[in-house]
Length: 70
Image 1 (cartoon, rainbow, N blue to C red):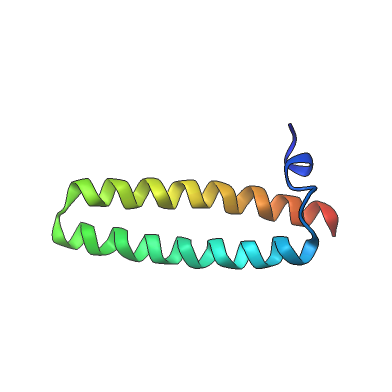
Image 2: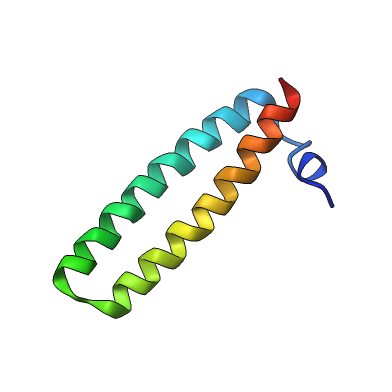
């Protein structure tokens, strides 16, 4: 399934809203990563890093789907 097909069910406005939501989540996860890194809490750092990387992948796909519509 292509990115365009995966995001076809969402309107352009919904995509924009969800992109903003995921960008906010990325910022929160990045801040958490930095905090855990400063605390030297490797386990929580790895969890926050995994969440951040997943959100970045979602963000890139959603942004590509939005760009394909414009």
